[in-house]
Amino acid sequence: AQSVRVLSIRKEYGFALYAHHRAAETAALIRALSGKDLTQVAMTEIAFGNANPIAHVPNALCNLTRIELGEDWSNYGKMTASVCALIEKLDAERCRIAGMFGAAPIPFAEHLHRSFGAPLGSVFEMVQAIGETRSGLNGPNAMSSRYITEDVPYGLVPVAFLAEVAGEEAPAHTAFVTLLSTACGRDFGAENDLLAGLSLRGRPLAEIRQKLETGWTVGR
Image (cartoon, rainbow, N blue to C red; front, side, top):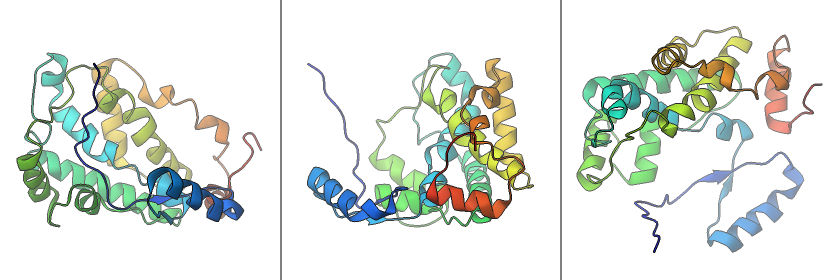
């Protein structure tokens, strides 16, 4: 028999869509499927709102030998103060870059609070509190883990790319991409083959901000 272990269910979350005229219809469908009334948010909030890479990538990099050796290790238990400092640095950079595109994503600490009910504080304080109730959750034990092979090319790389398009730097994002690409013998930046087709380079920032909200035809 197969089973699924559900550790937590978020009490609130939002949805976004390009077809704004179908917002009421979409909200009704979500209500019918989930029994919840969701709040419509800006598409940019969703685009920059993925919190998984913010935690997964620093924790994976700092526990890389454990992953490579296939060890069992506590996901939250190994989020030490220095790992959490990296998480906070990466998160602040994500929020700064998002602001260039008119987005205000939920900070990582707020994400922990909403998702797991942890009292607001520093990220280290919050993950310690979460770890006390989720001690059985282990980190990845293979280099093919989504913490690396998904969260780097499709989590960090797009944010670094958008920073470049805006004429800004993303040193933390770029550093993690470079280090894990080197460690894995891969080019995670090149593995994301979605960004080039958006043709964003050279476009005015105001136009990109509008397209992020309204959508666009690829190649135009």
